[in-house]
Image (cartoon, rainbow, N blue to C red):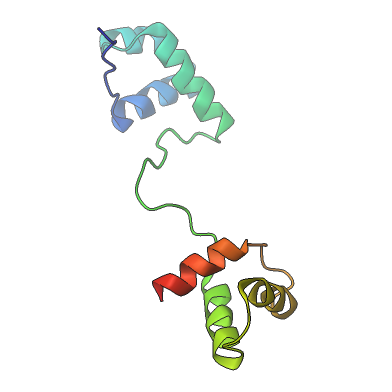
Length: 115
């Protein structure tokens, strides 16, 4: 039977990290609230690696590859040149927005299909 993982609330993670930063015995605090010693170490280590952040985004919307400016530019390119292929649209996008991150033609295709 697979192990059952318990979720640790953000408030408890914050308490453990604050105890660590104040120089208190955060392992004892973790023991009192029912968190394993190794988990407390990982909470502190991860918070130190991320500038004291103990809560991280989970799930939800995927990160967006194209900014609003890029989306508007793609719409303008398609309006100006409806006969362009995806590769040509991508090249024109790079010309009009040289500082924008590069996206693949399939990303542009997904956007066009959605709109």
